[in-house]
Length: 267
Image (cartoon, one colour):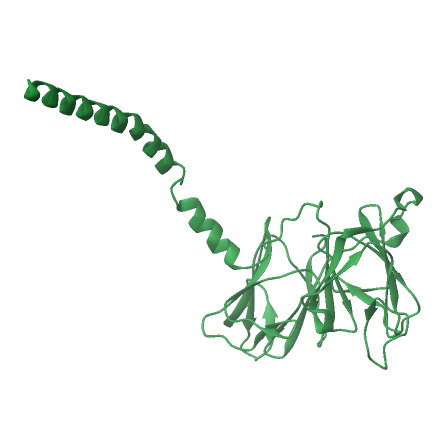
């Protein structure tokens, strides 16, 4: 995640760089919402950044925290491009992206149905659109990703696979597209990039062969911790297998003893 920072969308304030560590979101004495470790005030939430990714932790008893319009009560994983709402203040997570000018002719290639845009919000939430062929986003009836809004361009943008990246080309829209929270016209997308059309239609690019350090959900943190503390399961089958020869030997000795009793008893 390059140049990760928080941008105040609805008020004039400098962007806040997000380096590795914990960044507190507080309500200051004047009632304004601020981000910073040195700020004094009531803790509302905090953003944690480390090598695994980044996530939001909400303070105990705090209400009114949303990510992309969805309420968060305890913890949620964040991606560049997410909009965090805290008491009416929108904090937009922004990160760098690759420019389309970096594209090389050798990157041209065929599509791949394994590369998909997975919907995170809006009409396409929970759905996936593969990039086995170029896809057009727009209001037109023949658009592959259709956004039925009179203010949306009939042909807003085009996406196609180029090598291991996806080329996003603007087709004459009025507002462009947001990639990782940044307004763009053209861009090269990589795995994990978040693309937003018309403010609410959110997608994340998924490339199966690309490594990803993101935690998919907050529960994975607790699951990973509990799993590491559990003893190894294969120990039980191994000990059971070692007991079988002794049980077999004991059965043979008992059978021999019974045979001897029957033989000498009959005599």
